[in-house]
Figure 1: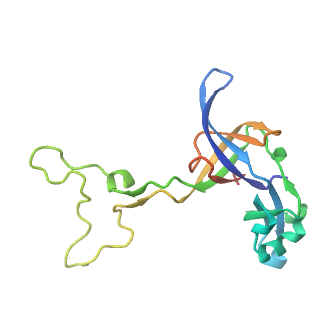
Figure 2: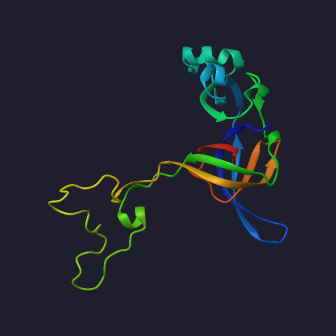
Figure 3: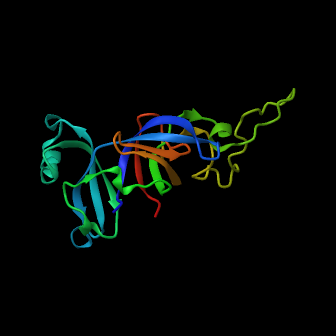
Length: 207
């Protein structure tokens, strides 16, 4: 049964399909994942599977984390994530997650942190149009009016203005699996995915 997994983004390349069309793809290297906790409606008020990933030396893990991981095995893990599922009883604590649950052509959802681009203006951040560039114009890349004066006398929250761009959790829906390599634990998905190289991504079913 398919749960989901965590994988590291290796980078992008392109491949040719059967018709000879170039398809842009992103390569993912699957992290070692293991079921660390099973949550049910009776114990936690919702059904989910907690997955431990990113292996780490035991002497580098805190005692609370080490105690939590004792049931799933002797190996240490740095990070944890959850996947909501309907039947958590189908899984066991300590069970390893592999690419066997995936198949070519399957649609998945990929969640990760987008590339941070720092402080950006309205043109880059919100796709605003610029002002006239002709002689005499003093408004080239200014934001324009941000509200009335006396009434309300303030700027409404949520106003589109300059600010920090990127660095947010982003989800790509209906990403298609193009190729699988079970030996190297490589997952090839169609199109671009959030984040830069070596970013950890969460891959789960599209539902």
